[in-house]
Amino acid sequence: QVQLVESGGGSVQAGGSLRLSCVASGNLDRTYCMGWFRQAPGKEREEIAEISPTGGTAYASSVRGRFTISKDGAKNTLYLEMNDLKPEDTATYYCAADYVCRDPFLYWGQGTQVTVSS
Image (cartoon, rainbow, N blue to C red; front, side, top):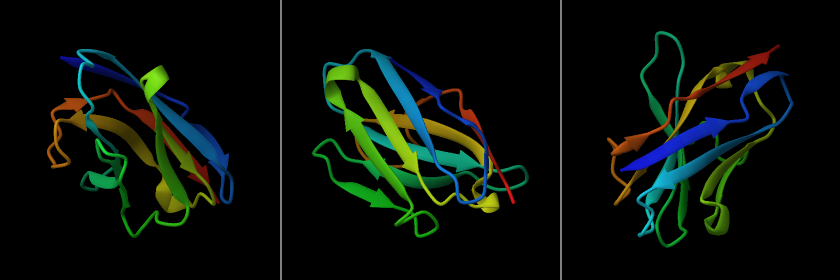
């Protein structure tokens, strides 16, 4: 079992920045694929970024160039740096982990809310 706890959400004006964190605990004896997802009210869940066990990254077109995913293995922490935020980025953001980069992921955090005002 892996437990994931997100933090760093909040309210920001358009054009602002936030950094989300996701601390992993539990069975961390291997390197997992980690991802960030988001879900806005009335919309489907969207995978926006992932980082593979070997460090390769991928982004959804909606966030590419504005968001950056990274991880600190020593701290067992996944990050999502979000710049140039837009009102359409408003959503609940979740981190997730699995043995491979394939949705649906096995382990999920509880989510953190991001609200961007115009």
